[in-house]
Image 1 (tube, rainbow, N blue to C red):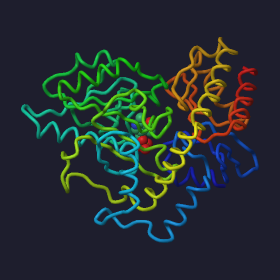
Image 2: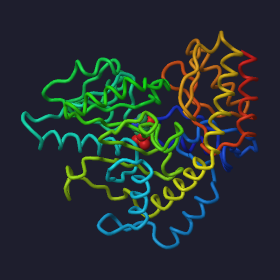
Image 3: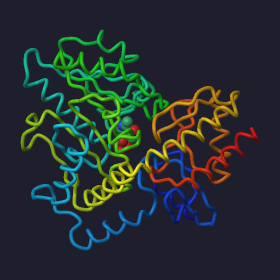
Image 4: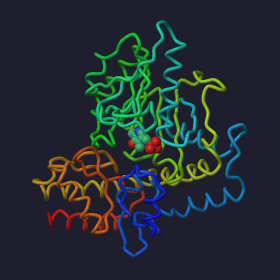
Length: 392
Ligand SMILES: *Cc1c(COP(=O)(O)O)cnc(C)c1O
């Protein structure tokens, strides 16, 4: 009934699983038939403080009873508070523009870079170097920024000015007079959960600073404590010019942000968003950040990360023929599986066992659990996963 309705009226852009979830609680979900699931996906890294988080849902309810939306033509109190909190916690001297998604945050970053390259110096600089296997979004320009040729099959002509480096080492050699920025993920999410080398990233940041080329770090997936620090940039001890965030920031409400150390590039009228940073989403994000800051400071977040990692490693060691490598950082983890067929079998069998997991790249099994996942939820999830691997 519901499946038919969906198929008749929703455009078929997703290879959907037609399960109907009706209730969630932290890292657990129930479907309409009463089946229970452990959720190692958190809505693709979005539900950072778990499903139906009591504190966040109460803040949302209280906020929408007063004001949901006003527009950015007026002061928005929770938006100003959220900007201050993000900047203070990050330790970076930046200002923030709020968007509604990761792709939009990256659009904002590209616009800041392009205007910077247009106003500063001669000739006009506009080229952005990104990495192969990167993922930066689904709008026309972020799709072009994404270094995967298979994503550029349709939808052209694309905007000019994006070039792809095979890896960090190849970036310097691709710089020319028109290069204005380099945009990277510190752990490629969709590309296979492979963290970049810290020293190489630090050397890259130093070289770019010297040449006045902006470093944009796409932290849409790695940001908001996913790798153990507020930003992966904090963990890598670098100072990017621009950071973009989205997924984990709102705990489920759609919010994105571009944080920029170049504060005076965009002037009134250069950029904007009708919804961006409204009362609903920024009130929620303030509470999400408070919760996660508390988890970080109490040591609970680190304990969860260690427990989760230990289970991932144990599984990898128990099945060396299936798992070729364990990858990732913090609660952004992956297991390289011997081949794509086996990975698809694992995905299917996990769902039947009542465990939600993700795929990244061609052959990586990916985990993005809520950052508040409990020890028991971790144990239950890996018990299911062990049954799946044992039956292969
Ligand atoms: C998910 C993601 C995006 C796109 O975010 P949307 O909210 O889907 O637009 C961009 N960059 C990275 C690194 C992502 O993981």
